[in-house]
Image: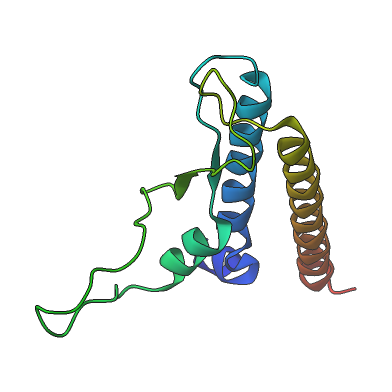
Length: 128
């Protein structure tokens, strides 16, 4: 099993994070008319960097400033809107649809990469 994990690398985790991001963006779109709903997104780079690094940045002296905006365990952040609405909703449909399209393309690219990797492993195991 460890051989399979090493062969697929970090892509299994990336696929999980990208899938979760698609769900969050779909929730944003579904709640576009809900008063006081705050649009959220997942910071993919930060989640993947955190997964690859075991050590967190620490201040060396007490007078140093704290690190910027901290992430939740799942990398969730609230999105800052370009235009505010009167009802407090921060979902902007054009932004959400564009982000969803890009996230779907990224998800498909990761699936295609994993498919080619698994195909290569099958060929190697069969001796082709």
